[in-house]
Length: 251
Image (cartoon, rainbow, N blue to C red):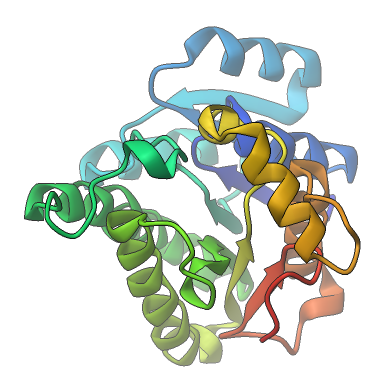
């Protein structure tokens, strides 16, 4: 892990901040990507010293992503080897406030596809030359257990994440010969991130009651799974979707 340079998109706050701290805790060098949270990103980078850099880029823009990866490589003197596609386009996990079937419009779906699928494509394409040169790469995509358990009408979010799962599996086949693994981690509702702060407390209670562990997964527990996929212990695992939700959803 100490040899890896890890790009965490949307790494300044919420789940991204926990992912950043998890990788820093294992000695990795980390690129903290942010869009609007400059203060939080800078603070996290300052606390990590020379092992982190905060770089702004809208991951929906391929030119900005390419510039970020190039700047990170120059700063650390080595290419980005691990990408965690975590950034989430503006979204609030409150089912009562999301569009239902009658209200859903294509622009809702399009916005999530831009922020999820296009963003992941941009980061992969920007980092891939460095990964190929190193003969090593790890791509970790953040998914959702709503594929298997669509209990709330997050139509736009879930559709985009489902497309990202398909991209995860096709990329794993395409990039495997280059020593690059591609996997997805699908959490459930996490307690608590910025996005889940709008979730009513009763929803957390219902989910906790339905899990074998009788509690809601934390962002730190989710981040542990990302460490596994980045580590040598997962070297023979690719194209997989690991559900990390306390056992709520099976398979």
